[in-house]
Amino acid sequence: MYEIMKAIIAPPVKLAFRPWVEGLENIPAEGPAILASNHLSFSDSIFLPVMLDRPVTFIAKAEYFTTPGVKGRLTAAFMKGVGQLPVDRDGGRTAGEAAIRSGIKVIENGGLFGIYPEGTRSPDGRLYRGKPGGLARVALATGAPVIPVAMIDTEKIQPPGRAMPKLMRPGIRIGKPLDFSRYQGMDNDRFVLRAVTDEVMYELMRLSGQEYVDMYATAAKRQLAEAAKAQKAAGAEKAAERAKAEKAAAAGGRTPEGH
Image 1 (cartoon, rainbow, N blue to C red):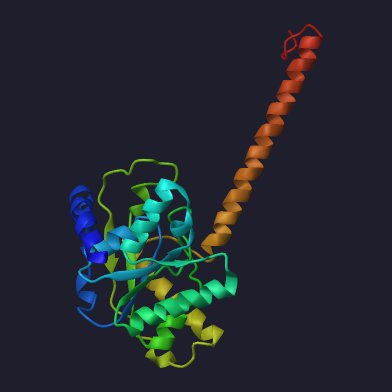
Image 2 (cartoon, one colour; image 1 turned 90 degrees about the horizontal axis):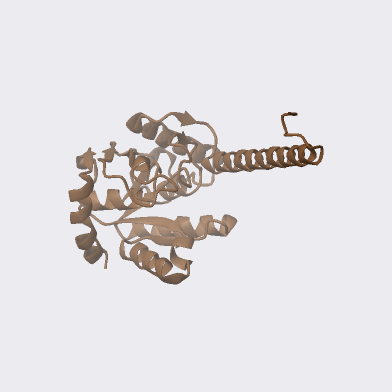
């Protein structure tokens, strides 16, 4: 199914967007590896597999597989076809453990496991703090090399709210494999997990050129949502005050400006 989907998708994607790639030689021709990527757009999970010869298995939020309707079924079929594994991100620790087990299984089968250490898409194109769970634990449990992958400009192709993608060239910059064998057997040490994750994030910052923000992207999204909500409430309050003033002015036979 993966090869069929890739045969259908890859030619038009390459023709329309002409993605550029640096560092393909850092992807092993065979054997397991973890591809740790920054996350700018939904299309990250399309452009990277399209440009690699080997299949890549990513974990993806469960909503992509469970949304009802025709569009939902098509999305689910597409995600399954390109080798994505569903994970319920709202499932707390259970969901995290499921993602880790999925990653370990892919590695044990000799495959390429793709993961986004930020845990979610960047809300503003900046690079956010990596979560010290899945990536580091899979790497330390399996001994597989971690290959940093920087997606470039993918967020500009189809930003939130844009129905049709913009035709432009995204980029992929692949770094040299990182070896964390020195931490083997220490996958329950939170300080080690943090150190491994931070080392990967530093490489992603260097490869991508993104500004680094020392907070989680989920927290940044929450702040933005709260700010937008506050701004909307302030606008509604101002409109209500304006309407009240106009009503009072009309009742007094005057315009709101007092004429």
